[in-house]
Image (cartoon, rainbow, N blue to C red; front, side, top):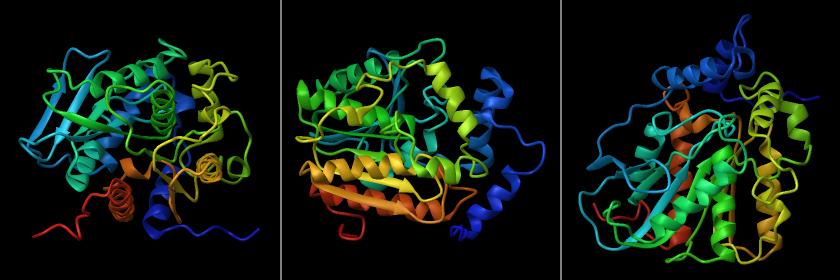
Length: 316
C-alpha cells in the first residue's frame, strides 16, 4: 500500500510520539491521562495571546469561559465551543489557546463550555450540558454580558459531536435565537460505524484505536441514541455547515460521512480535509506550525458562510 502523505512538521511530532515507551491515554489511567493532556498544552500548543476579554462566566448550567477580541460590541453571533478529549479528558484550560485564536480570527465572541466528563458523569451528561448551555447563551443572560443574535456551535473531536448534537437539538426545538452555522472539527459524527480510516490510522498517528475504545468504555453511551450518533437523525434543516477533517485521522471518515449526509440533505456545506496532518492538530500549533494555516482557512470559510468579512477583506 502506498504510504500516505505526512507533512514534515507532523512527521517530526509523530517520531517523538511513537518512540519506545511512549504512553497513550489508555496506558496510564484517568488521572494521569488528564494530567498529560494539560501538560501537552505548554509543550505543543501556541500561547493564549492577547484579548480584550477573557473571563469565566458564572450562573449558567455548567462552567463556561468567554473570549473576545473586542472590549464592547453590538448584538451579534456567538461561537459556542465544545472541547475534545473523548468525553473523558479536556476542560476550559486545555483549549484556552484555540478558543482565544478563534475569537481573534473570527471577530466573534467565543464561549467555551465545560460540560461534565465521564466516567464520573457518563452519557448523556455531556450532550445534556451542551444543549442546555447553547439554550442559555441564546437567551443573552446578564452573566454573559452580550446581546446574542445567533449561535455558531463548534468543537473538536468529541466536542465536534456535541456541536452537531446541539445544532440538531436547536433545529428541532428552537432556542431564543437561531443557529446560524456550525463548524465541527474532525468530529466523532458517526461512532457506531466502523470506517476504513480506523484501520488505516488507528495506530501510530497519535489518536489510537485502543484509547478510543477506553474513551467509549468510560462514556458508556446508548449506541442507539442520536445524542451519541448524530447521523441517526436526518440532516435536513441544519444551518450552513463547515466540516474540517484531518487526512491521517482514525475518525476522518466519520467527518466525511457527516459532510456527505449534509450535502445529500440539501444543507449548504463546505468540506475541508487537511492533508498530511493528524487528529488534534488544532491543539498542537506550536509543534505543528502548519496547523495555523488550517485554522485560518477554516475560519475564513466560516465567515463566508455567515456572510461576514474575512480578515483579507476587512479594511486595514
